[in-house]
Image (cartoon, rainbow, N blue to C red):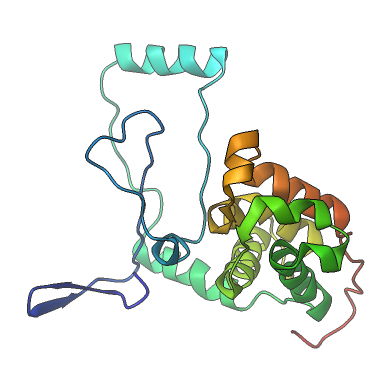
Length: 205
């Protein structure tokens, strides 16, 4: 994924831009499939949990299944998408926001240093530095979607679970006690207060 190319045997093909990889996990059927190594999982920006739909949502799904197939239309062009990507690169990230993202990741690796010693028995390995990078990149994209040219701490906090949940390697004790990554990240978010930033500052991180 990171190299933006695919190699089969002795041949390598570059992938076109934009390039996106999506993978699904079925929590029920696992026969014949194997978990990805932690290092490969870490290369995915997010792990988004999709639960069962609500009653109203499921009713709408059924109604759509009974209707004729809709006409597919293009919502955005590749040039427009490239423009949004360029816009994300221009979003301002204050140093204290970057420090907040790094602190959230560091707390999963050294919980005792952040008054989270109770988490230590549940986390074998915390989030890698790639987690902090992706957390800030995702927050920049969220800022663009919200019509801002700067990232706020709440952007980072709202994305923390999606960006970090798959980067935590839990211990057998966590699995035995039913403690999940989201519970641990909720504790981390509660223990590390979001900073207040001065929007008048001009120097990015």
